[in-house]
Length: 287
Image 1: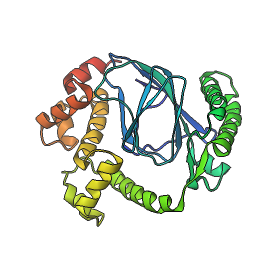
Image 2: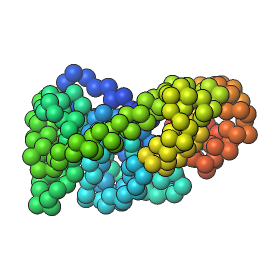
Image 3: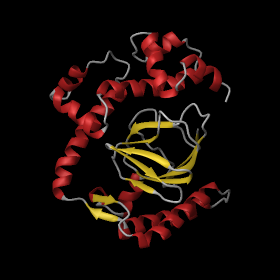
């Protein structure tokens, strides 16, 4: 269960913050009995730092599955396509995700788009982890001027990121990887808006004047899935909200989301939740 904020409604997460806020802090609390233990593949412009507190975090990031131990952290860079959790495993987990507003990063350092962040030296790791804890504890406090403290911590965080954990992207990497990533993100944004349409992978490729083979390669390389699986993931994510917030019939929800029939909807829904849409609605409707 996600607290304080909701899961992204599509794989591009538009982070909307007040003018004063520079952080979006998501508390993630998963129980073995949780119906939902997975945040699907998505991307955003903001920088995200995953901070596990109880048990290990599972992060999928552009083709790699990483295990981040409790007491450690991991930096997800801007525009990196990633997912959180394991849709096929039940487990207990508690931790936080700290997302730093892109506009604030740009304000601090105009060339932020040329930066890639990762822990470069272990000697800096302990102080950085303590700073992350200070941010979390400040956010949880009820102090009337906590936003001022968060502003101060934000500048310290960006300073440490730039001074201790920053690498300059190589020109070749920017030209090659960013071009492909930009193409893929454009396609993902299109699919996020047209998920309820009758799906045809070749038509999507034609819309972007790309070959089907090239587009399929992008999905395999960056997402490790095909376009149909991606579209079904969006539809299931939308279905969760519809099941809990509306009285629409399951058949109407399935057809409105673009599924051919209830049978295909039930099949895909079980892949993510190990239960039927009806059971999911009944067990979560009053929570």
